[in-house]
Image 1 (cartoon, rainbow, N blue to C red):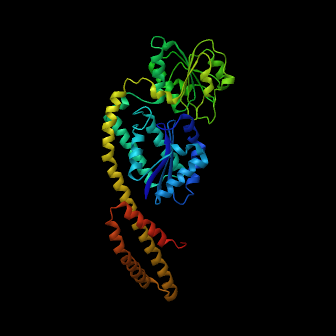
Image 2: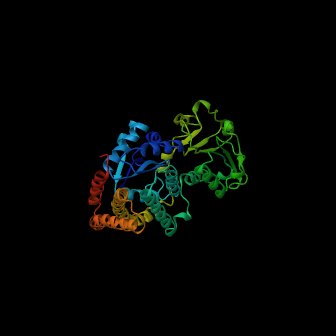
Image 3: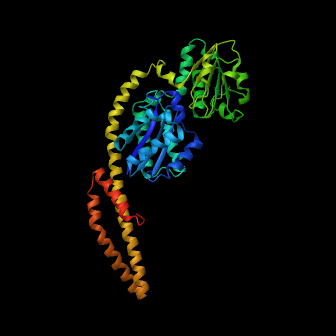
Length: 414
C-alpha cells in the first residue's frame, strides 16, 4: 500500500483557476463516495482550502490511482486544471503532507489555520468512510508533529492566518485611525469568526457581522461584546457607510456584484478571503473601491517573515527524520496485511475442510475437537513458511509486488 496525492496549490496556479478546483461540504462528500468506487483507490481524503485543493489516496496501485485522481479533477472540476496539477507518491507524498500541515507550504509561511483544516478533512473523510488506517495514521502523525513544532518554536504565540493578516493590513493601512474605521465582516465560518476575534484584540470600535443564515448575535458577542448584527439581505445598504469589508463565506457563487453595489461617497477597502471568490472582480474597478484578494497577500508586508523563514528551515530538516518512522510503519502494516490475508485463507480452508469431513463422518465430542485441532494445525503449518518470509521483507517494491500477486491468486473471480 502506498499513499499518493494529486492537486493544485497557490504557488503555480492562478486564483481564477484555483477556484475551479475547490470543494464545498457537499462536493467533498460526493467526491469521496465517487472515488471510493474506483478499483485503484482504497482510502481517500479531500483537503480543500483557499490556497489549495488536494486529494490523498491509499492504494496498492499508485500509478493507476494517480491517473484516476487526475482524471477526476479534469472531468469533475475543469480541464483547465491540466497544466497545474501536481502528483506525488510514497515518501514524497508524506513529505508534502507534513510540509502542508506545518504551514511550510502555505502562502503565509507558518500559518495556523491549515492545521485545523487538515484535521477537519480527516474527520470528514472518516465520517464518509473514506479514510482508513493508512490515511488516518498519516494525517494524525502530521497534525501531532505540527502541533509540536508550533509549541517548540513559539510560532503559535503570534497567530497566523489569512484572517489575522487581513486585520493587520487594515491596521497598517490606517495606523492612526484604524480603531474608528467602520468594518463589516460577511461570513460566520472559521475565517469570519477569526477576523472578528482579531478585530476585538486589536481594539477596533465599530464592527458589523452578517451571514447568509441569520444569527441573533450571541455567539458573536462572546468574541466581540459590542458587535452589530445586520440581516444578510441588507448587506449592500450596510456597506454604504462602511470603510472596510472582509468577506469569507463558503458560497459557491459571488455574493458581492458590481451591478448591485451602491455608489461610493467615501473609500472602501474590500478584502475577499473566500475561494471560490465572494466578490466579482469588476467591483475592484469601481471608483473609491480597493479590492484585495487572497493572492494579493503574497505581496503584503510581513514584519515576522525573516524569523519564520529561519524556523521553517529548521522544521523542514526535522520533517525528513520524522517521516522515517511513519514510512516504516506503513511498510510493516503492508506486511501485516499480507500475513493477515494468508491466515484468513488458511482459516477459511480449514473451516471448509472440517465441514466436509464432519458431514461425512458425523463426529461429536472429543472426536470433533481432535478433527478440528488436526485440520487447523495442518493449514497453519502450510502458511507458516511464506509468513516467515513475508516478515523478513523491508523493501516497499517487493512488498507491493507480492500484494498484487496475492490479490490475484486469492481472488476467486480473477
